[in-house]
Amino acid sequence: MTTFVQQPGQRNARGSLGALLLASLLLITVALGALAVDFAHMLAVRNELQNATDAGALSGAQDLWTDVSSATSDAYTVTGYNRADGRIVANQSPGTAVNVTVTPPVGFSGPGTVQVDATMQTSNLFASFFGRPTETISVTSIAGTTGNLFQLYADQAFPLAVSLDAVPRSNNVDGTPLNQCKIGDTVQFYINSQQVKNAAFTSFTVQPASASYIQSAVEQALGLAPVIPGFVPAIAIGDQINVNNGVIGQKKLAKGAELQALLDPSRPVLTVPVVTGDPALNQSRPVVGFVGLRVTGVTLGNGGGVVETITAVLERPQVKGMSGPPLDIAGGGLNGTALNNLVLGPVQLIR
Image (tube, rainbow, N blue to C red; front, top):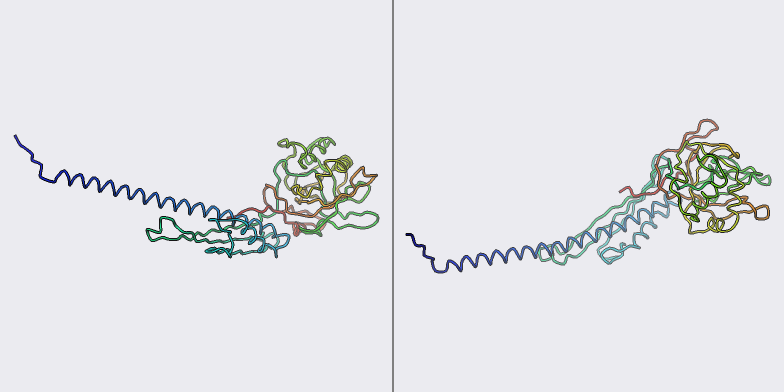
């Protein structure tokens, strides 16, 4: 029989080795946990910084077709409204640098962009023990227009069609046609059928073109009635839309909650289809584009019973849609460039 004799100190050596391994694993676990805390902090700051530059780029891009000279300052301002790591995201914050680059739009070929770059230096809580006391975080946001709106999704349009080239006339005085205006201009739309008008109510592609439909579409667009999905159809450039008798719409907008909602400055921009020629009643016209309207005034006639004119500022419609070029219109001297000052593509983040 073989007898194994334990050498003195053998059990203690094995126990010491096990304790050492356990301590090493515990130390590694604590170190990894500490680094994870710093990493999570870095990700949180990066997200905050990205949100700030996204907001600044989008704000600046809103100015590309209205007042490009304000794009830089607006991008800096809105970026600075935000905080990352407890600091405002602005050049005056310690360890922070913000830079804005604006590329102005050029016709249809270059819609323009606003780029906001930001860096921020953050302090590590635990990684400093491993030789990394700070981290430098860098982000970039680019926003711009996507070109002309080619199509509106359902339930986005207001039931008013405006003419691109019709010259309105009232009391023997000519008004300004839409194609001589640009984003930011104030335009007057005449909808009284007794005048040479440049706008009329529309039921879009819905048949029959009933007065009750126009009333419901007006209420839905102004937020006075629940949205019925698909009630206002999707509309694309080239679609033939109905140009209706405007009296019902004129009366509906001339009083009460509808008129109040129409003039409410906090109401979203109304997006309307653009047609060409005289919007003759009870006919159809092809859609050639879209424009955003911020209504600022309404003129009433017939003792206040109907709307004579609508005064509005042209704005970029902030809606979902497909981007694409305007329709080329044969004849009449009109082509895609007729909308050159009314490039209405939605603003969105590109990067």
